[in-house]
Length: 337
Length: 210
Image (cartoon, rainbow over all chains, first blue to last red; front, side, top):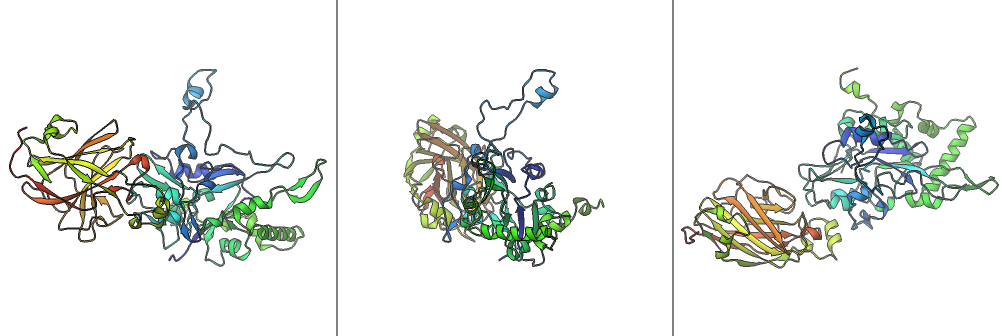
């Protein structure tokens, strides 16, 4: 049993797909040897194949409480790291040098199908889904490991891989239905998002959340009834887990995206949203409609000049209001205030 | 099984060395580890319908020169893989349960070789999923794969010390073998093993003219 559970809510209506979160994570955590192709934080276009490619069809998780077999994504499916001839192009003094990768043929990468989306003009659509490890309440990775090398911390519910105990068997990679565990070929161990534990322990928000220019990400303890996470997830019920049917009870939640209405050939709007409800339900479950209805009602309130706590929360005028107890700046805890 | 005393272990480090041709090879039968004993539900569910541990035997020979011991292992593995692996297990004391890889207060000591790693590991286990690094016993390994036949020589220093399977000329102990086929994604408890401990006697006097 855990005492508290940290959680994150991502408002997909605000995500710009700018990858600042991805880069913030990359620069902080995955720059060591063997981590070149690791992206603990990814942002992919939906509908799309995601990262790793086709991850939603790779199994794992639980059905009726029982562990389900899964496949292990290949490095190619994750999208291998490429080296580019930057030196030659920018500093080599060759006027006509062309930027090129070290691999002659590249046909997949971690964000390969960016902005492709679905639908037909003028009703084509897409949105972005940022993903990290879900630090699940029932982590399939933890249950799959034969060495008990994965721990769910009692203090905050963060799921960690003990690199001393890990022997690189990679059952965790197969069992995680979100395919958010990577294998470090150099170190011979599995690695994944640590929810910026060293920051969180000092009340500093994870880098992906703090650096987000769109103020997409909210933080807090799920059981803090006065906190923003509890309000969005449990009180207003507008934040939903991704693929709840995987059975792991993720602790990253999403405010589903609104979309403009479909238009006819003359450009006249209909009453049907451009992103099909069925598609959103395939991602976030059957509670999507209720969440979107609540958001619409609260939005109308705000437009009518009435008060809406929910809209104020989602607008997020101050970043400190978004992160619950994790509202410190790194320089505060480093004694540089 | 007898570990023949020889003059120089150096002549036996290469699994293809002619010196081994004079040493008796014994067949060790192997069987897959029971699915029910795989330690997690995920592994049991994933491998319920998948074959593993299908290498049914290997050839085993051993020599020592009073300072070091060498084990020669040979088996058939049609597809070479960087995760092909083999381990020789021995009790540190007594008769620990092999099927559970030892237990608390009854550890086993292993020499573990896997193709993708340069060095042979010395490891200790006190149960399934408990393997941890053991003491350096001067372990080495030289491997060869040719036409589906994998040969390997594992060596370690003789002697006895804390957390080390004792091996001294003249003594009798036990050994067991585990074998993983990398191409079949075998790792952890998904392996072929020798089912029971086999007796291993270290010859006290030289009978081998090498």
